[in-house]
Image 1 (cartoon, rainbow, N blue to C red):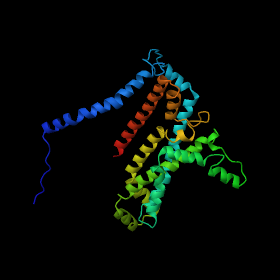
Image 2: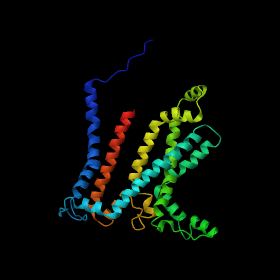
Image 3: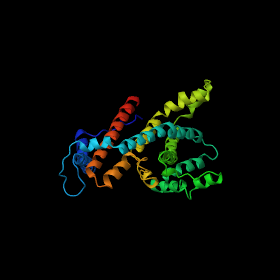
Image 4: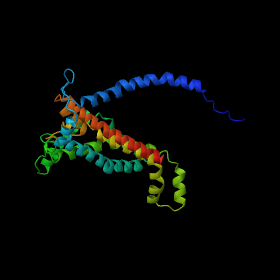
Length: 296
């Protein structure tokens, strides 16, 4: 029997569906995305503390103060450092673990669960746990140091060490998420491709570079997108660990916005930080979309 052709909706029905579902979506987008973004851009041109209507127009002065501020430059460099560590250390480790655990071997499911558990844990809870680990008086790290005769390190109170301690927590926290993304991608690859490559005499390294990585490219691009965007928006882990200290050495863009814009009631200045953060995220998203469109 011939297969029935798929019925398509007439143009009038399509137009009716668009008119039915588009206005609610546009309304929600306008109320919760477009209007707040527009208000933030408007407030950024004022010296305003959040009380009453903004009246003191300062033009681009908030942006000038922003880029002259050492703490903001530190926050920006910290975000870049987190992105670098995520791409150069976290994602390759997650890919290696995914390759080892993708096969149905003994204990693979247990190890997947162990590696994925930190991601399930709430960021605030994870931050509090690691704050105790790094505690120079009662934490496990201090106990180990004292056991071997070393002075207990106060890691989170050291300007030179605090950010690196946070990087360890970031890799630990999100490693399992990227590993599961890669495992899902690996399980979609046809095993017959590996069998054919093996029959053709390909080595394990050749199969990795010629079969696994090219077919896993969509998962890798998605993982890079999540890693970079999450690094730019990093906030929840920083606050319970250091709150951006000591001396602003662990500030990120979002913690800087909260500390210098919200808690100090400098709403106009904080809005300028929000605008810069939005532009960075939008530029990355547009660039990622162009790259993804080119390779899809």
